[in-house]
Amino acid sequence: MKNATTISCSAILFDMDGVLLDSTPAVERHWREWSDKHGLEYEKLIAIAHGRPSKETMQVMAPHLDASKEAADYEKYECEDLLGVHPIAGASLFTNQLPSEKWAIVTSCGHKLALARLSHVNLKAPDVLISADHVTQGKPHPEGYLAAAKTLGLSPSDCLVVEDSPNGLKAALEAGMRCLAVLTTHEKEQLAGATHIVQTLESVLVQESTNGKITLIADVI
Image 1: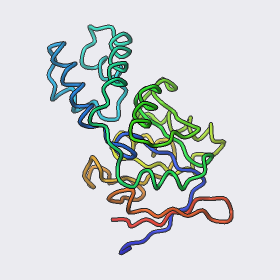
Image 2: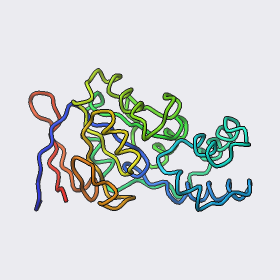
Image 3: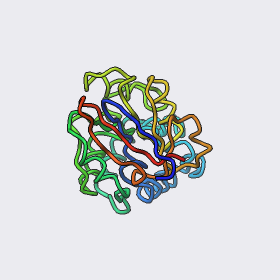
């Protein structure tokens, strides 16, 4: 590794979409169908949808609709149509090396959809999975990451977040956590506030030190 950096933490909190799996083709297809159905401008919708709960996106784009009903119907359809959802290179190897009590997922999608997508790409679900169903405020609010740390019995400073989006990065930093950003969906400049930046999870080696902490060797850029 050209720019090898050692990172130590007690647990790793992963965003899901864009970090562990790529659902972009499915997400874009579903949102285009939904926006066409309701006569909305797709480009404006998709610009705010990434990293945001579906219900919240619907409330912003179509406040005249029943967001709760629309979001429930939308998630059901998303769980049924998983065409275009793929694992991200290095995700399975990375997470399989982590003890179950030392990692979690914090995602903006619903719990059922998160489990459906993880199963579809053959990624194991962690014991702690904080979804949109478990929080009142989605990213960039830090509630989800703080809930994951609390469930793991750790302080925020003990946790390392792995994120791919500006909203997720802001949530991690607002939670008082360090953030390792991966350049899977955004440019380096858009994630400039991250503690560390790598190209992909394949740029990170996982070790576990004798004191029970996780040690990462990251090829940072």
